Amino acid sequence: MIISQTPLRISLSGGGTDLANYYRDHEGFVVSTAIDKYIYVMVKERFDEHIYVDYSTKEIVNNVHEIKHDLVREAAILTGMTKGFEVMMFADIPSEGSGLGSSSSLTVGLLHAFYQYLGNLVTAEQLAREACKIEIDILNRPIGKQDQYIAAYGGLRSFRFCKDEKVDVTAIDLNSEAKRKLGSNLLLFFTDTTRKAASILEEQNKNIQNTISFHNTIKELAFDTLDGLNKLEINRVGENLKTNWEMKKQLASNVSNKEIDNMHRLAMDGGAMGAKISGAGGGGFLLVYCERDKQDTLRRSLQQYRELPFFLEKYGSKIIFDQTRYDIK
Image 1 (tube, rainbow, N blue to C red):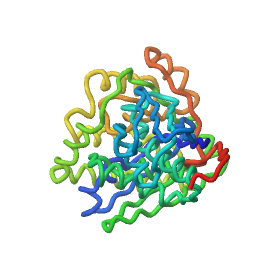
Image 2 (image 1 turned 180 degrees about the horizontal axis):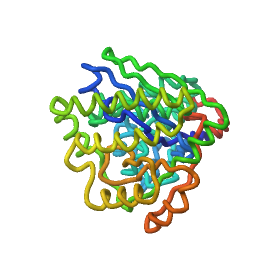
Image 3 (image 1 turned 30 degrees about the horizontal axis):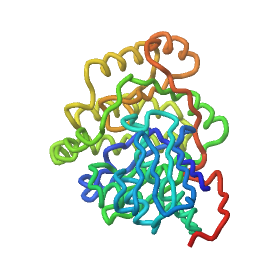
Image 4 (image 1 turned 180 degrees about the vertical axis):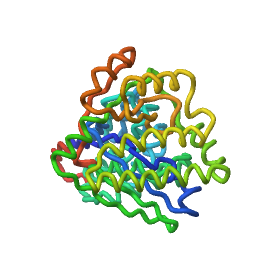
């Protein structure tokens, strides 16, 4: 039996510039961090040759090409899984529409678990690259690359998305005090709505040529966020979240709505320095930056919304259980 644990993420700045329609002409830049909320994938050998896939639906099939769950199917095909195994998936939060990168974390976690089951060691770069291949190239999802990379690498990092498809990954090293301040000043509140990102991202992709100036500003905010972190000016993260949200709303028509706008207003009135919807928009979680001495007021202002406590996560996808009894190759 193999169990992989893959973190979810919050994007601090630059989201949207990791879309191919943007970075292939202008290069993208994102600052993101993993958090201690996870997707778990369990793979175990079966006595018979059937394939069992357990999620909200249970599938029993004879070969990998018959699997209906597209991420499981493509990850199994790519890694070389064949028959006689069972895969189960679990998530710490709603597994779709959260805006925390759960689909990409699942893809990375599936690849990691399958490769470990087959006895193959893989790097974070390979996991991220192949997860992008599955989601973007094979399944044609209109998404960017940041989620796969932060899920694989973990930690607090910046990502430069180059015109030639190369991704430069850089760890952001903070001292313990700065890391504590960043982690304690970031909060997540659930909008009570989940949504599929595809429709928002499809519109955003189509609009890119008309929204270049907004994307450029978002990228500059990401550079400024990195500069602030490197100089231990942590509050610049919050200041840039505020501006990032104003830019983000210009990228597609359904990024926000009346309920989200009201929730954002309550956060700002409650003492937040900045806030934005995590992910594509339209629902999921509101990411808020608020200094500790104002957080009691903030929580009272947002008391109707459920808070998701979290810590920053140092590690990317990892194998937390490995008990392979036989040579399954």
